[in-house]
Amino acid sequence: MTAQLGAPKPRKIRFEPSARTSVPVRTRGQQVSFFEDVYHNVLAMLWWRFFAYVAAAWLGINAMFAVFYAASPGCVAGARPGDLEDAFYFSVQTFATIGYGAMSPATRFGHAVVVVEALVGTLAVALVTGVTFAKFARPSARVLFSAKAVITPRDGVPHLIFRMANWRGNMVVEGQLRANLLVLRETREGESTRIPVELRLVRDRTALFFLTWIPMHRIDATSPFWGGAAAMEKLRAQKAEIFLSFSGLDETSGQQIHARHNYKLDDIVYNARHADVLTISPDGTRTIDYGSFHDIEMLGTPEELAWAEEGIDA
Image (cartoon, rainbow, N blue to C red; front, side, top):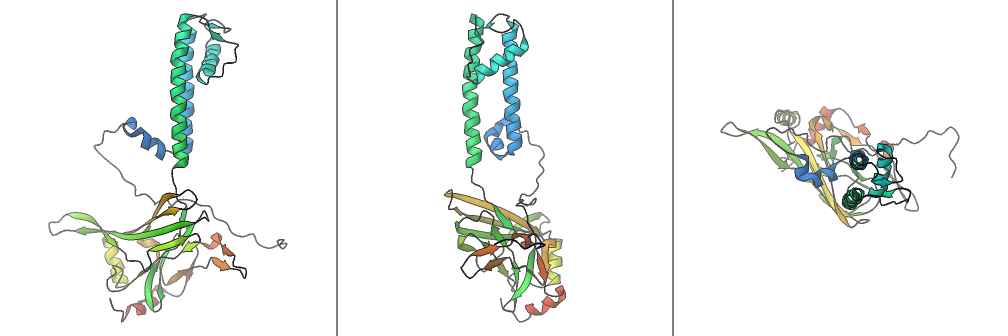
């Protein structure tokens, strides 16, 4: 099918993990070295930073051995005596086991340095290869969460509704979602403590997750959101936040994956719904319009939702 001339291009969005997927934490009093937990630190490191460190270490090691070769003129045959540039090139050939043959160790000192550098090169290649593979093989989830959550009536009962989508489009089996409301409460002794309150979902798991999922929390008398504006003011005073945690088995890699997201109270839109993004063609093909994934449609004013809470049993 050819696109019509002058037809507007479909909106597109990029997958960007939420900036609020991790709670910012500042610590004091810790004396921590990078090398105390270097493996975890490297796995959590961004790719560009990892390769930058690898390149810097590679250049630094070769420069160090080049100094050793240049410090003993004549220890490398075919190199200009004491020339640091030739010594660096010879170090690179030794470190990477290239062995062009134009330069070779000529003295006992040169052979000794080559032995040490060959050992260092072998260990370095093994470590970098292993860590690179571990970073590539680490399971990751690409679950897209809607920018806003909405509160809207479903069968006459208000529900807090989220939206998720499997960005990869593959199959995630035995997906499970947990929703918690983290509130700040003060004990009788005057101590402030963070307490997680579980938000019961109408359906907290799905056997197959490959399109979109609309998790819903029923707002009844047992819900912390029960009470309309008064409940929201109470939750704001408690500095409440909603945390979603998703886990499932990625059918492509056969590994367990996890995704998380959190919503602030200002991210909740009253008396609204998420725009439709899924269409099914007559032949059964599913189409997801990600360009409208974060769009919200207002159903009226927020005050018009208050009637839905009347007469609902716990």
